Length: 215
Ligand code: Z5A
Image 1 (cartoon, rainbow, N blue to C red):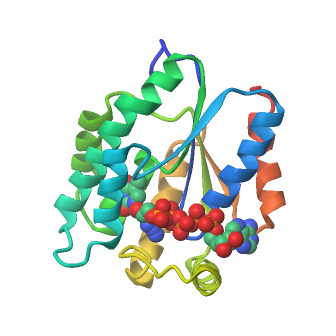
Image 2: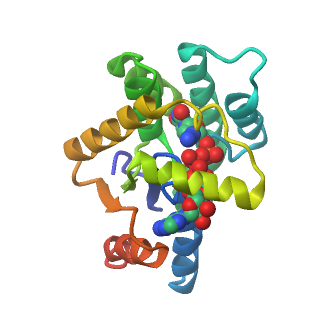
C-alpha cells in the first residue's frame, strides 16, 4: 500500500475494450455488499461532474480530436479531480474504492498505445495523483479479436456506436495488451492477470479468490 494513512482498500479493474470490466464490477459489487464491505464504485475517466465532461471530450468529440499529449493531459486532469474529491476521501474514511480503470490504463493506452515516452507519462501521472496507487489490480486479459466480437454484440444490442479508442485499429489493441501484460509481469504482487475469456461467473470467482481472504 503506497500511503500508510489509508484504511480502505483500493481495487482497480483493467484491460482492453470489452474485456468485461463493467460486468465484473457489477458482480463484485454484489459480493462485497453481501460480505458487508462498505465500498464505492467509480470509473475513469469520470466519477465527478467535471471528469464526466472530460470523458465526453475524450471519447466522442471528433471535431478537433486531441493529439497524444493533449489526450494524456485530459485523462490526468480528470484523474486529479477524481482522486482529490472522491477516491482519497473515501479511502481515508475506511471505505473500499473499486474503480473501472486507473493509472495502468494511462500507461497502456498513452505510452504503449499512442507511443508517448513511458517515463514521462509516469512522472505526469505522479504529479496528477501523488503517491496513490491501487492496492490490488485485476487485469482482465482478452484476445483483441474476441474483444471486437463482444463489442459488436453489444453495439447490436444497445445501438451505442464505437468510440475513438475502440476504432483505433488492431495494432493499437495488440500493443495495449502487450503493455498491460508487461506491467503485470513487473508487478506480480499487485496486478493479478485473469483470463477474461471464461464465463462472467468464472471470472468473478477468480477475482473473489483473491479478495475473500482480505475481507
Ligand atoms: N483510457 C485511456 O486511454 N487512458 C486512460 O488513462 C483511461 C482510459 C483511464 C474509456 O472507455 C476509454 O478510455 C477506454 C480506454 C481509454 N477505451 N477503450 N477502448 P470506456 O470506459 O467506455 O470503455 P472500456 O473501459 O473499454 O469499457 P467497455 O468497452 O464498456 O468494456 P468492459 O467494461 O471491459 O466490458 P463490458 O461492458 O462488461 O462487456 C462488454 C460486452 O461483453 C457486453 O456485451 C458484455 O455482456 C459482454 N461480456 C462481458 N463479460 C463477458 C464474458 N465473460 N463472456 C462473454 N461476454 C462477456
